[in-house]
Image (tube, rainbow, N blue to C red; front, side, top):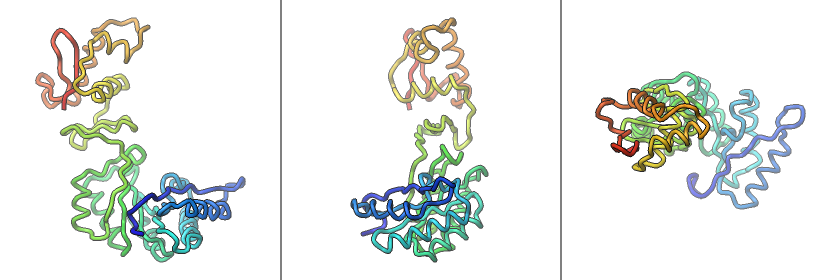
Length: 266
């Protein structure tokens, strides 16, 4: 089968009570997945404890998994790192072990620029010949791979062939919202919202074009027992507009229905 057809299980990495990797159980899991008809296996992804394995454990799991699979289905190995050189070394080693493809998570913690992300992925992918899948999971890494960067990488680097999109990020013009990570961006710049401001924005966005009265917003966001009045809603809407609108007095996103309430429109 093709590397990118069907269902590929993101396999867990099983451990023994002493904290070591349980390779007997790993082989059992792999055989069970293949017997049940899975089309591929992803080794050492998020589910596979990639962030908590030592580098030696990480590569040993990939090597042993390839052996256990023995060519029955494609193996996609997670070899991403926030260090480009480490990602290159792990990717080359996984290729030597016989992995059919690589899954490269965006570099976490560093908060690379778009240019930095491009160079990181390009250098890593160019070090190997097998297909590479970019892994965008901003809620875990703290950085989003923007569509423009993905386009440039796919255009310029022949073996970057797919994206695992798990950012949970929704885009509305210049406004991007990661609902899982509760993060908001304007033109790639993160905007710091308070918890209530985010709750307000999330509610309005997810019910786009629905008008909420101030009383209803107060009840939903603050609760029926909140001692304040509807002016609290007005204050938070104003502050939210100041943070996400280019011209708060002429809002693009959060609109007022005079005499009724507020609503979101993209």
